Length: 360
Image 1: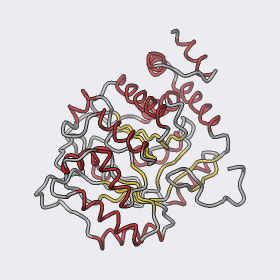
Image 2: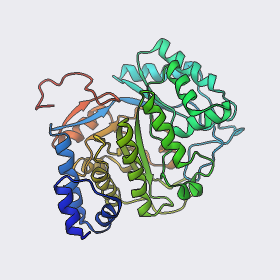
Image 3: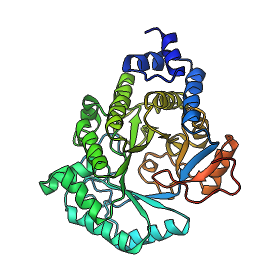
């Protein structure tokens, strides 16, 4: 199909296929691609609002046996810098989150070889018995790892975690959902099929989840589209994803040596994501990796959500990239882009009515 025909198809809001998306990704003018993505975003969300969530990233442990080449955060088992949070440390982090108006915690860790599934069940039960907070926790690779350690299956692990208090599952550990790429950058982590299988099972059990992409390491540009279409196919079947969050790999302090992705590369990927993922309502801007100015531009390249306030963030910070924004700064950035900021939950419900509102 000619490039102009692909553009016409998008303007008619017809679904594009992989070869058409590739044509667009390769050839579309930067501003045209952003314009098309913004049009789709505004049709999905005509109200003049950009959402954000107040939460905290809690890494319950940095001990991991995976050894992924892109990770600067983990410590190998036995490393003197390894840790597992105590209940007291965990409580203090959650108390502070609630005091700042937080509605959830994003809780993830490594593949710890010495912690049984009961440890995670007890941790969830401890939190739920003491704090009124949504627990968005345990990426698909963690869940697959738990199942292997327990000689169990993914469905049983998810069911047990749900019973203990798990509310939703983050999309971490996706990297690029192409096994040839995963074997190079994270050979000890779950396969692409296993990642997708965890999400499908979670959706079957009634849990909502998010989806991510970490790009700009050892994949080819075409692999990014393979990733997007794998997500679109699963979303067609389940409708369980609430949002998609692409972010650019940060190479400092990692075992992968290559230049970081540019702002233009990030915004092109974000825009093509909005056009391919026609069954995803929400796309998040990644200010944590790209910085506030690029994230502000992202609100005109397909994103309708500014993501998390990130009261705490450790994994990206370990690469030496360390942006910090207060709630007030996030709201100011959104307003400067021409939108009304609104706090949301993980399920994209407003936390409280706006007063006065321009139509959100």
